[in-house]
Image 1 (cartoon, rainbow, N blue to C red):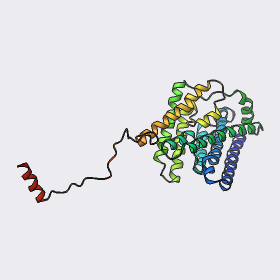
Image 2: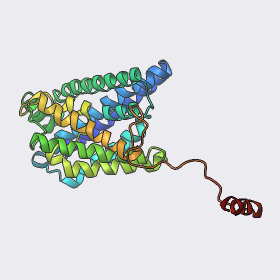
Image 3: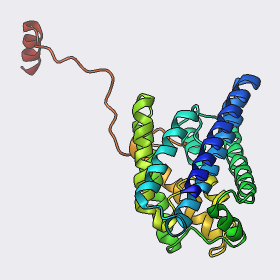
Length: 290
């Protein structure tokens, strides 16, 4: 139980530090710089640090701490609730940034800035989290620090099946995101947190259900078991394809690339009035027929 308390303190401290950093950067930086870079970098760091600690609980907790799947899934749900509330509009996910670009909601320089911020934030969180594990504040951290140099791949299936799993998770996530984008925060955040928890339960045993290239790169790309190209196919190409399919299904087209709707017929805004013909027009038609 002591190890669980240390992990809970780690989650609380990570979210608190990131929230302070987020508010300070919002107050000190220009609005554009905060929205495109600082907010995304801090959100990605918060997400990556919590994901790394959660991975310790998932992999070592059942046999070293006696943690059951009900506790672990509850923690995943609560963490994504906190992320959704505190992110202040950040996505911390490259596929969401690419979706905004394809939907003509963000420019190319803005998208590239977000992508670089997300990668840098996730990598910084990985380095800081490993430093925290080295303090060996709990038995789980001690074991993790000993195993950190020889981490195993999170891909526990074939590359093709892994691509399908990550693509399917990304597809359902983005489709839900598009359907809920105009909903109130009080409904959108719990719904997405529940969806992420369900996908973590179903797809976790195969690929760990990242559906986030920046997060996967910081957590598993350096681990042995697969090549960098295989990781890129599963955790980058799969999610990008899943996101594109979700946008196509929701919109019928990719607004950035073409305007023609492939799936849905657009109804005209103007309707031709269908009134009764006047007697004069009927007589005219009869004379023309003669």
